[in-house]
Image (cartoon, rainbow, N blue to C red; front, side, top):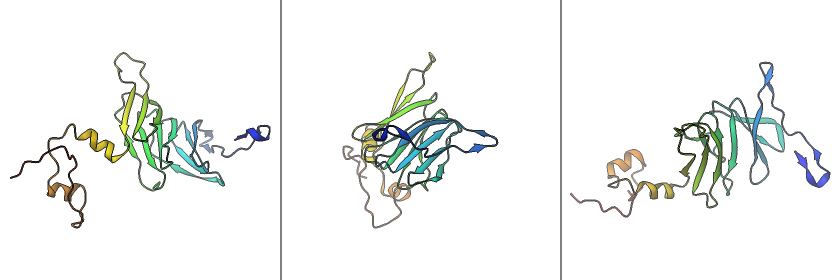
Length: 189
């Protein structure tokens, strides 16, 4: 960490430990929006969440199988996306790190970068495309349920039945069934 206000004095926040006699190269770094945590990705596909007050005990988030290419945070600071050479992007809820991330894996090649749109409605992933067969270089993933439902409503032909709602959405009988797509008029039997 370089302190630009104090003549670029430096402070080492984290040094990657040696694994089996060799140290994995650090491949990406990102700071949370509040500046309290630093997230480091390495060439072994590990993501380390380091609390700046206590960098000696990083939390390791697992799942990626190759180099972490990029780490980015959404604007409200609740989500982190990690892009990887394993052809996936993982979307982490920073308030629920004990839960598995959402894995976005419909990429034909490694993912070089990711960015949230200014309204946090979508996550854009930049895909390596150095072959003639690869035509898509950017994938857009909705990150809000409302946005996702809006996109899906263009493809579905009916809303869920009460039975489907109970199975797939909620088992609580007190929660009333809602129309997923208000623009679809369901046929009455």
